[in-house]
Image 1 (cartoon, rainbow, N blue to C red):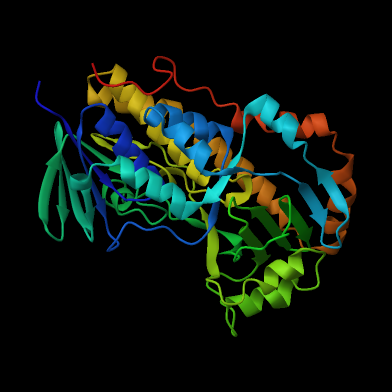
Image 2 (cartoon, rainbow, N blue to C red):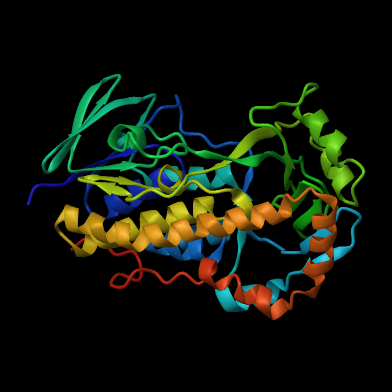
Length: 392
């Protein structure tokens, strides 16, 4: 049988994981990345237990490699901006029930994935401009010419070109009503031991330690879409959070001189399908979500693992993609909804609502909070292949 070929559009975490997965099945894969290089932003990432199980499926030994690379995130809980605890997270119990959480820098994760992709498969600076489904093949037009494949995977993010070309009537991303800042501090010896979030009216601040004593920080605030800090984003963060409880002032001060990223938060309204002919959407291109559950990249990795399983078990690409859609669409759209709901509560700004939230959160039984994680973290890999296997 002739070797099958796939084009993955988008060279982020989900796209590279897909390229690894398909290469492991014997497919010839090309990754078209619009940017001039395969790079990641300077921010941290939490890989929850469901993502680590997905990595186990993507390629043999990949999950273990990532587990060794990162540190276990010490989950703290939620505090009031004054420092009073609203909820506490039993990290040991989370690990016992669902598995560990690994915290690492996004660039380290991307570099690890890049080393697993055949170098000849990587095509940076390749912008897709057209896409045509021709029966059992797909023709992709890009600035360098045309390419044909048996499968195209759109892993090109929130503003996906593949989604626009194949689903021109798909709904546009929806602004969530708040923006987010992210940065990584320089190494801070004696810095915070654990992580967690602190909540104020319409604002939140979170931090988590990285393995090399740097700290990943993020903050949110209700702002008009498209706004920016007039004196720079580090100054904007300091103005909003400098008076909060320790260690937040030190973490805000450490933002000076670093790259402080600011992005408005969006989610993608539900699509009717993630599949059209021989084209499949993956990650943010299919189900962009707010970051409140830390599941954006985790769900992209689940997508990649599921795509590998269905294509390994079903030789008919169309039938395999139909199964992929059935397995992924309901779950991911449910997580989009859960993340939206959690973010809405965290961003409440009306004083009576904030006061009520801050009184009720400490009353939530810890066992109930743990059980609420199950629909997200207790992901069972698709039936059939339970770990990555070489093609027969």
